[in-house]
Image (cartoon, rainbow, N blue to C red; front, side):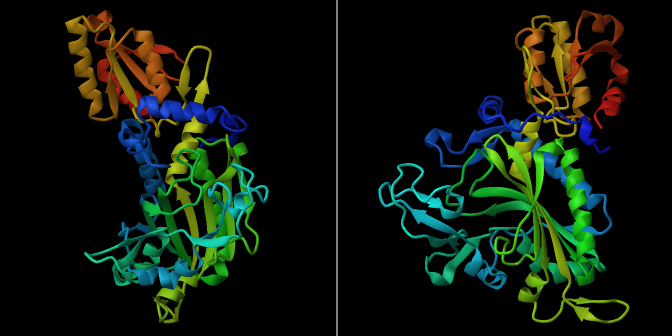
Length: 438
């Protein structure tokens, strides 16, 4: 079910303190850790912890179900991170995938020229050197000898894997236009100025698909996928008042794009890109295939399909989901995540940890629920603190086993958002939760 715009809270925009609270919560509760922390860390490197990986996987799985499993016109692939360097030569990345880099003459700090508000060093106000183009691809070497012949690149995007495998997918699935190829996975960019937590990192996760169409239908499909991306944002729990669709003008679009619309979000640190939608024309397939790879089954005409590309940043999706869900009430912090995104769907408590009969029964209920839901077991501290602890990580329901449970075979179920409690028979608990967790 798609949420309505008016049903969603306004939480994230214009709140500069919110970012610090999110970063603190993520470290404290196990969503996101600084990478290599015990060795002093690595700049802009992060690891997803036990709760973070569940949130991340939930978003990935819901995205895949929505855009692949529930459609008849999209199939998926999972491709290699390292590709033949000729791929990046053909795609134009070796020549065009760069940012303007400037260096301060005084402190020697480096910045992207297009992100500076004034022509002085933002750190020391020193004079800047003339800009140079800096290629963003991360280079490595295959084999025992590090020379030009063994140089390869970690992929800066995942799109090229879908173009290179286009003919293989076509031959094995017998798809007809329009159809899409979807993929999820890592990409790498040697960013000049990464930052703002998981918003911009050198190693990041993407979810996207290439939707292959006939040239004369590109405008129709562009508008269609723009609306589908809006619906996805609503399902992610995003207040659409925080989203701005920005038309990227000539001269600022990627070299392959004839039209690009960026979905920008009002982060606590400013309005910046969340997702992108591009019309890549037939640029990529023409560069990779000497002969047209598609043949119309009825007319026999051979041609290069055109492409609409919706791109979704997974790490930014995680960040925005947290920003939108974070709510600070009088005496508690609660992540009001959509239930399908919540890392744990239910937590089970014995009322008292020093009563073996309560602990035993709670353990039985926990293992029963764990067969159907991601579940947590908690017997630390008093019951109120346990409730608030689960609120802070977004668990929608808490189940408490008390002395009445031992007599009546029922439990107390508490709702995260309303804090209302009701008694439910243990035998009905799974069906009750299934009805709520949709």
